Image 1 (spheres, rainbow, N blue to C red):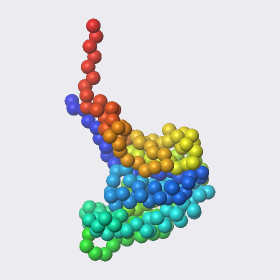
Image 2: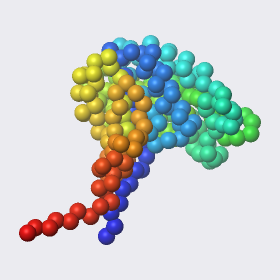
Image 3: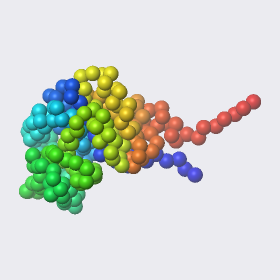
Image 4: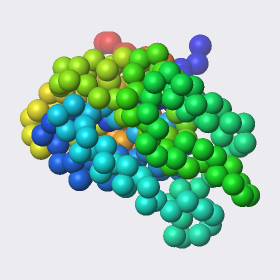
Amino acid sequence: MKKGVFELGGSDPYVVLADADLDQAAEICAQSRLINSGQSCVCAKRFIVVSSVRREFERKFAERLAVRSVGDPRDPATEVGPLARDDLRDALHAQVKASVRAGARLVLGGKPLAGRGFFYAPTLLTDVSRGQRAYDEELFGPVAALISVRDESAAIAVANDSVFGLGSAVFSRSRRRAEAVAGRLESGVVFINDFVRSDPALPFGGVKDSGYGRELGGFGIREFMNIKTICG
């Protein structure tokens, strides 16, 4: 039998706690949501925000999404390019429309853009809740789903309420508090006050339907080794 490592994508939650630096969080969340036009396994996808700071974070987040430059990816000034195929754009738009019909509120974007290329407007959905496609499914494009929760415990529960478990992030001014929350998140990778990415020195991979095994780092090398014991 062959050993295997499977990295199967995710719906990464970014948890914004009540004591977070909201300017920092909004900027990093916008950057992570729109990397590669939202077409990455470790893009931020679900933004879980404690209700006491939800309105302020939503405003700052929407402002940062709105100013991103959409255009030709060959232009150095472009920040958001097209999606890979027209059927992917159609599928993403269907998820957005279905979520709005189910009660999500469209704050920004929410439509394909005219012209050559499969462009979709940077989009923000709020009032997202369980049973909506934006909550239950991975959004593989520049669409952010904002979920408001009452407190830290609820934030952890919602973050873990997914079949995926690849990456996640926590935003808090307290390193100790953020690390405590990170330890309770069901994901293979957690970043604190930063966006999720891989690094050759660090093991990378997911849990649940996001796969198993690790790539990169010492753990990644050992995934493809057969350990041999010799006793004498």
